[in-house]
Image (cartoon, rainbow, N blue to C red):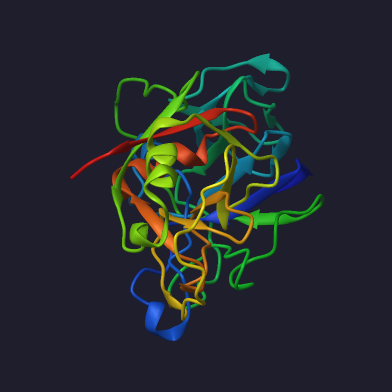
Amino acid sequence: MTLLVERPGPLSLVQDRGRPGLGHLGVSASGAFDRGALRQANALLGNDDGAAAIEVVAGGLVLRAAAPHVVAVTGAAGPVTIDGRQVPAGRALRLDTGQRLAVDPPTWGLRTYVGVSGGLAVAAELGSASTDTLAGLGPAPLRAGETLRTGVGRPPPHLEDVPALARTGEITVDVVLGPRDDWFVPAAVRRLLDDPWQVSPVSDRVGVRLTGGVLRRARDAELPSEPCLRGSVQVAADGLPIVFGPDHPVTGGYPVIAVVLDAHTDRLAQARPGQVVRFRRRP
């Protein structure tokens, strides 16, 4: 069972649940940026919840079925068609031999997930089929003309349609301060929590870069490299925050002023350039 990639779009990657627990080897967890959307796609198809799917950034993906498949599209909201006919996202869809599934640029959100019954059959590297863009692990980004093999599927369960997870307007994420908030002047900590921050267009899976006012440090000493988590809000030399994504480095030498709660980091997967992000403090 195969799918042919006719157009990959700007960036389409194979992602699953990633490689958690390998930080001591210098390997970040990677995996789907929007883990909830990956779980939705697999639930609709009756797959294991971490089965490999395609993470599509900004749409543009076109797949042609070389055999009958059942697929599901979740994540960002936008037009999805089969042979040019609009079809609903958030439900299991039959794709007959020769038919084309197109995922156009989303109207809300940024990342769309395309799952297939049985999951993508991709060789695992360190226990995962995910592409880690920083470490260079996993399969290369999809290319036009590439053939994707799929696993053996099960009949999809009867489920209600699932909603798109992308949010319009401002995105608010909860943070806990530290571990290095004391490296910043009190006004910088207040600015982090009170000001609106805009998503920079150079954001990627390594980190969501934010623009706004400079966060001035109280200490200018060099900080030895420390372990970093997904969701760490690191402030680089230019004084602007970067929220680490799934392909983050495992250590960093700039101070981390706060950490986004893990349950809220998926929201940042759908943050579009220019969209406003706010931080809300949790004790």
